[in-house]
Amino acid sequence: MEQPAGQPAYVLHSRAYKETSALVDFLTPQGRVRAVLRRARGKGGSLVRPFVELEVELRGRGELKNVGRLDSVGIGGWLHGDALFSGLYLNELLMRLLPAEAPHPALFEHYTLTLQALAAGRPLEPLLRAFEWRLLDELGYAFALTHDINDDPIDTQGLYRLQVDAGLERVYLAQPGLFTGAELLALAEADWQAPGALLAAKRLMRQALAVHLGPKPLVSRELFRKR
Image (cartoon, rainbow, N blue to C red):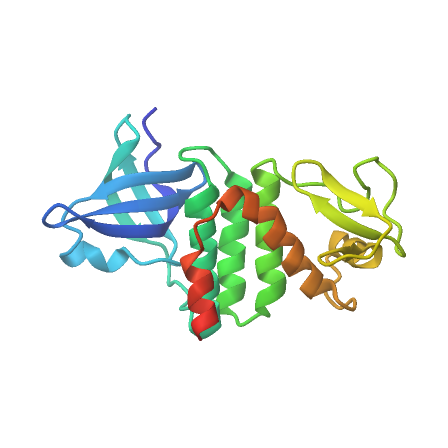
């Protein structure tokens, strides 16, 4: 189906295509869309950079669209240092996990707000964890944080492990990689000031995403490690 004219978009990824064009993956409210931008290495190429809100007209009925028009919307916030790597991480997650042309308008809005928060210098870890959780939820991979796989309420004194295809399972013998009930309930409330909440959230999201990302490592994660 032909895409509507003038929809908002962000560049997730671009690469050279043929002699003067670029193959661009856009995030739009209608999902992740791939399109050819003609003469991208000329004057219009300056718009093919991530984290800047665009208005794009996409033409064509096949999986590969053509960019009919591309304009910037206002002034995009520049990302620097760890905020830049965080933005690249979000883009890589979306490229790896978001199906093509599957509408996710709420995720698009959350992405926009996350970029604005990164540009404003807000603490990175809560923003990344919140986005990871929203992405899992939008893709149908989320699980309850207040109840275990038997639908029993999470006990603050209990120990739990993640069964990715089912949810949180209570265990009674200590072992590596477990989560306390108190940590999980803090995550459910997004209480990042609770002791251990941010570290537990990072471990939990990494476990939850790993099965969907597969064995190929994330380039952005490797860049973070080399800093």
